Amino acid sequence: MTKWRAEVLLFDFDGTLIDSKVDIATAVNCTLRDLGLPIRSVEEIFSFVGDGVKRLLRLSVGEENPEQYERALEVFRLHYLEHCVETTRWYPGIWEVLQHYKDRTRVIVTNKSLEYTLAIVDGLQASDVFRHVEAPRDTSELKPEPVMLERALEVLGADRSDTVMIGDSTNDVRAAQAAGIRACAVGYGYGNRERVAALNPDFYCETPHDLLDLW
Image (cartoon, rainbow, N blue to C red; front, side):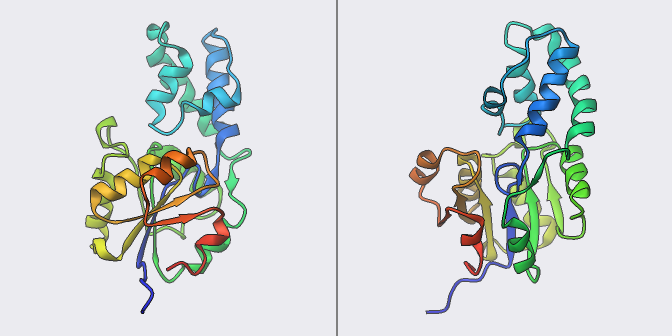
C-alpha cells in the first residue's frame, strides 16, 4: 500500500515549532510590573496561553482589574517585541524536520498575533522557510475555528486531501477536523496529551524526530 504523502504541512507555532514560554512570561511580568500589579509565575502565565494575546492578558491582569486591560495590551506589545527572541528557540529536532520537508509547502497557522509571529520567525532566521504565515484577524478566527486553515488553503491553492495540520493542542486537532484535513498531534509541547489523544488525531508524534519520514 502506497504511503500517504502530505504536500502541505500546516504547523502550529508556540508549543509545536518553538518553545516560547519564558519570553512570554517575561513580557507579561514586565507589563504587570509597569501597571503596578502582582507578577505571576511562568507556570501560571502559560496556563493562560493558547487562545490569543487578548485572553492571555485579560487573565494575567485579572478579571478584577478590567480597567487595566487596554493599557496592558499596549504595554505588553512593546515588551514582547523587545523580549520575543531572548530565549525562544526551535524545539530540539524541529529544524531538522523543517529541512527534511523542504520539498513540501510549509506554513504556520497560529493563534499568535501576526506581528509577533513574524518578529520571531525573522529573529530565528527562518523567513525563507515558510511559504505563508496565517494568524487571526480577530478573536472569532482563533483555532479551534477552522477559518485560518481554510484561508491558508485558499491562498495556497492547496487541496485538503494533501494537507495535514500539526499541533500540540486540542485547538489544533479540532480545527483540522472542522476543516476536513488530517490532524497530527505532538506530545512534546504545551497541550494536554490525554485531551488531545481523546480527539483521535490521524497521527500522533511523541517527539519531533517522530515527524521525520511520516509522510
